[in-house]
Structures are given as C-alpha cells and as structure tokens.
Length: 550
Image (cartoon, rainbow, N blue to C red; front, side, top):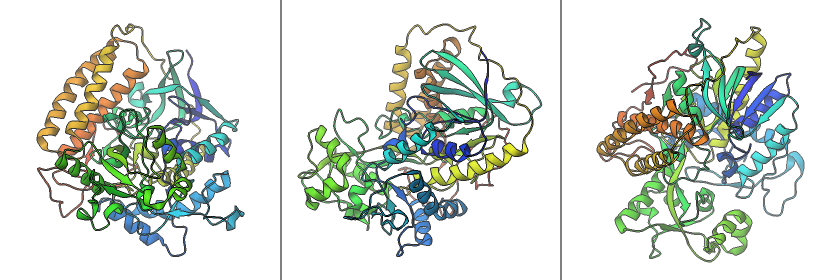
C-alpha cells in the first residue's frame, strides 16, 4: 500500500467541510475529502429551520449576541459569539453567490442583490432573523455546495471512506513535534485500510447524537472526529451539553423525523392529549422558549401524565399557509398517516445536537499542530450550555472561512516535506467471528445513555452509566485488538468514547445549567465555568484560548 498525500485532508462532507474545501480550492491547493458514505449524507443535509443572521433593518448584532448568550446560559465565549454573529451577513451573501436559493417574501421574485428574503423566527430569538429555503435549508445549502466541490479539479472526493485514527508525531515516535500528519481510513467497499498524509488535517465529522436511542440525526453522527481527537491528545470540552430537540415525530417507523422549530416560530402550539396548552406554565415565552426548556417541559408533562407523546398543532394557520411554509414536513407527516394541516401531530424530544466537542480557537485550530476542527465536532465557545436555534450552520460557514485563511497562510510558510507514514498493520488480526457482539454492544450503549444520561439526570444514574461504559470499553478494546476493523466496529469504538466523555463531563458539573439538568444539583452556580477534559497523553501546543476550568 502507498500513502496518498495532499496539502489538506478534510474528513467529513457537511456544510463545514464543503465550504472550507471550496474556499481553499480557489488556490493551488491539493485537497482530499473523505466521506464515510455519500458525500452529502450527514446532519447538514437534514437541517430544516435555516441560518440565523442579522439581515433586517429592525434587527442588530447586539440583539443576536444577547439572544445567543441568554440561550447559552452565560457560558458562551463573547469573542466567539461576536465573530460568528458579525460574520453572518457575509456568509449568507457567499451562499447566495454560490447559488443557494433562499425563500423570498410572499409574492416576491428574485432580483439579485435587491431580493427580499423571508425571515422566520425561532425559539430564543427576539427578532425574525432566520433565513431559510422553505423547510429544507440544509438540503439546499448542502446540495448546492456539493455541485461546486465536485466541479473542482484539485479536490479528490473519496466516498465510503471512514476515518479510523489520526497519525501524529507521537505515533511516529520521532522528534517532529506535537503535530498531525494524516489519518488512516477504511475503504468500506474494498475493506482496505488506506493511509492519507497531509500538511493540514481538518475534522468536520459532525456530532455524536447516535450515542442515544432516540435521535433526529442520521446514522453518520457517531462522534468520529471527537473520539479521534481525544485519542490523539486533544482536550475536549462541555460534552454534558447534549441538546434534545423538543419535537421529533412520534411514530414507530418515523426514524429521526424532525419537526422544525420554525413550526413553533410560525405559530405552532404544544398541547396535551386533551388539547390543553402547557408551555405558558413553564416559561414566559411559552412555545418560543429556548430548546432546553421546551424539551424539559415536554419530558415533565409526559412523565407526569404517563403520555407516550404530546402534540404540536399548527392547523389553525390554514392549509395554504402550512403547505407553503412547510411542504416537506407536511409530506413527511402524511407518509406516516398524519395531516398537519387539519390535526395536531404527536411529538417527543430526541437527541439532536452536540454543543461540546474538540476545543478550538476561532480559526479552528486544535491542541495539535496542523489539526483543525470545524462544525459540530468542534467547541468554539459559541453555543455555551445550549445552542440557540439556527446558529449551527452559521458557525460552520464562518469558522470554515477563518480556518481556510489560516490553513492557506500556514501552507505558504511550511516548505518541509512530510515524513514517510507507516502503513496500517493488520497482520496479527483475523476476521470477526461473531458480528452480533458489536450489534448487542451498540444497542446496550444507546439504551443506557438514553435512560441514564438523558434530559433529566442524577449522580446515581450517571454512575450506573459510567459502570456500564467501562465494561463496554473493555469488551470493545479486546474485540478491536483481535479482529479486522469494519464500519460498525469503528463507529461503536467511537460512540463508547463519546459516552465516556459525556458521562465524565456530566459528573463533573455540580449544578443545573442549560442542557445539563440534574435533580441532585437543581440550582445554577453564580460563576459559569467550562468542563474541560484533558487526555493522559496531552501534547497540546496551546493555540486554544485559556478557557475557564472547573
């Protein structure tokens, strides 16, 4: 086997990875982009609501910044919030220039720079500032960027390649500094492990919500980048803050069918099975309260009443309005036997977004030289203890631009040849004899994470989860060391690491803040501090700002 070298290796093909690749492609830079399945099959594709940006004259940056801080329960980093919020209009214009077709105001026709775009409002926002493409913004953004990326001659796209581990100077056992040189990845179709070398490596692998039994995320969201960065020696922060989306369609076959927050933003009401509203008893903003509050309120009402679900009702807005604003959601509901234009639809909370992740600065730099992280796998300080709706795609776009600029400059300054990288050695392993073991472990992990590390937590539940994950880790490590890797084993290994990091962060936080709510410590502390985990083999060169530490 031979190592495939390029200037930049991007692992992950969501909005962050694709936009970064496009910004670098304008230079004479060779790029290899790995995607674990089809290029666009990730969380970005399924983002419904839109992208938050100050685009209206009645709105302003300070308002968007304040809303972000309030949603983040005072844990957001102000420099990160300001940079990303103030970079939003330019990011939106960049997408429009690329051909993204956002929804116009009713009856308007596209008129270039003078076009008037429809802005919706979502929970936690004090203004209408969410620009969108109907109710399928992610699909419009992702597929548009994909077309441009595929047209670039200096971008090599390798689909069905799942990264296994990063190649660092520590692994090479040389005196080359604390640096990342590439990654090993499994070609799923050929079952061959390949070696990729690069001057800069970018993790844009998305979140980790598949660690939970019920999630809105696609099957790709297994926390691969976070787990790889942790094993390579990077610090991880705030993994206890798992955002549960309040409204996922409740149906035995509706796997991950998200009902966008924009439905509530446009007047949708949450009701009990008897038709009574309840959100006004939990928060002054009722249905427009931040996601953690709405999810916790639904969880409380379901447990108190013994209900399988609550109901979301927007039928009072009329059929024409609903089909115009939410055509894809209406079609999805109809496929499961629900007509949202005439009846309430059953909804439950589900794991949705990973607010913590790999610690980075505002250029996407991690603790390891030449290793970057962008998008949901990173932790820039924007989201704090709870992500404000529609700030996620925005973060992908703004930080991807900053990372591209930083990588571009570093490539100019670095003329050193890359070292020879060792091939993957699987000479002492055999084919797996019982794949059912992996399947059973996967199911057990997701179930105890849902039961013990969910919306409402206690130390006792978390300790039970810790005990279970320790046993799983031992089994997985033994299995990983004796058998050839495959897609399921790689993802299970990563999810077990994600579970461990999430549990440890949750046990460390002795308060209830944002998305972390514990019955043992129901109050919030006066001073907001981050939960930062440092690996035993920490070798960071500290490009990351000095975050506060618990």
